[in-house]
Length: 388
Image: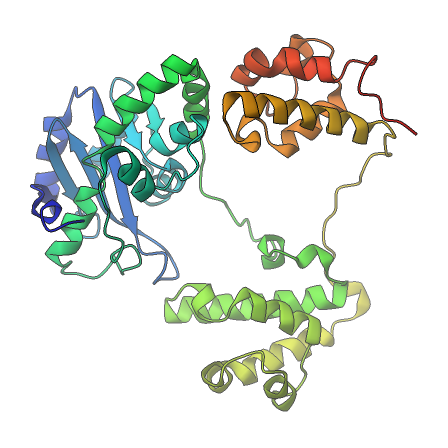
């Protein structure tokens, strides 16, 4: 923020009584702007470190690392009569539920709304710059928000993130209504309030690792071994796993399988510092994976694909062509209108009317209403047939 914006007036909430008073003052408010800061760049278990809220010219910065009991805040977020303005709410909703069991009702996501209006750059800094000619200082974005005491300029920076959301939401709502897309965003926001943190359920680490599905079973065993090791080290050091060893290094270890410290060093997979700290443990983990009997090697789960439908590719192409035409006319990203996964599901289902289209898993009501006729027409058997 600019020097002027650093003078933002805010209430810093750092104890239970102050939080109760803040919640009492928010009771019955019609709209509340919200943002939060977390420490995912610095700790193994990420935490919400600040919650910023603005309403009627007042701003609160709540410190959940100092407040012992955050439960009074749950009622504010659950209140259906209070609309909550977030910008890019997905991460925030998951984090608030994970740390405090807080659920969000009556959401309006200004980042989502911007995308539905065809805005190309939807980050908050870009949107504020374009609409209000406000330049957001980015130097605090990657700071450790778990540090206490928190510098005053960082608190002011955090408070500044919410003070423009009310006016931004007002403008976006008017534009969405004028474009006939307000109900589209309302439905997407309702769905967004139901997202929750992913649960591991003791599944293998490789299931969450990009590229694991392309590995053979022995390489998959090595990958799992080094991922387990990396996770254990990260937990012990209270550091994010990517700051222990990169995913690129993990993949190279799985493919190259160095069985000795010398081979690991020769491969130059790790830095000298990483070699000094982790080399012996990595080699031990790889050796253990290499000693597994063939029958004990992990198997990457794959869904059995149905028998290929020769006409499916043609239907997908017809739907994509229709989607591109509609996206151009609406000045919206094609993937925002309907993504490829859902488009493929429509092609497989081959709905002949809107009732059948509405039965496709994942389809939105607004998509059925706004796109249904065009999608069904694209699947008409007398046109767009696949040749050959």
